[in-house]
Length: 137
Image 1 (cartoon, rainbow, N blue to C red):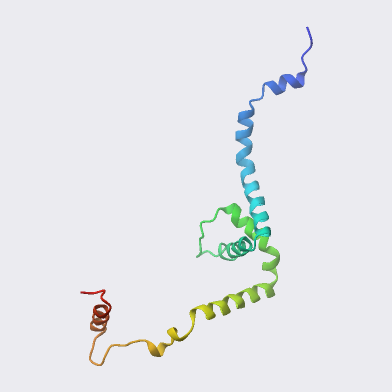
Image 2 (cartoon, one colour):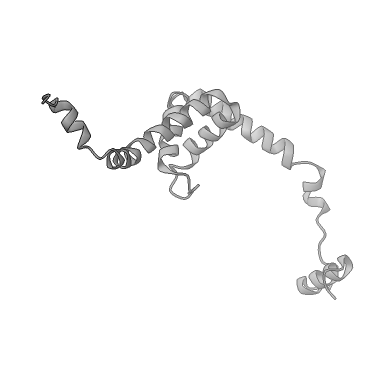
């Protein structure tokens, strides 16, 4: 009778389903981390989202409900630019200028805000405005 190889005997006794089910939870965060980094480097929009996550998530008052692996990958992806204060300053200035362009204009002029007529209370003013717009019967 042929002698069995001890390596073959060990390998036949391994339950590979258990091995795979043990390795998957270990590799899952690593794969997500790598996929997020690769995606952020390939796409400009993903890069911008990654930077927003890296800037917003560490703040204690903001919770984006993003998985910790994505936050870590975003921080890793944006570390070089975050350390360079001129980039952050330029990004902030760009954001503020775009905000001003979009949300300022004639419609925000405080002189155009309607106020109660003389002798009219704020409640009467609001009721009158709601009746004029058809929101109040």
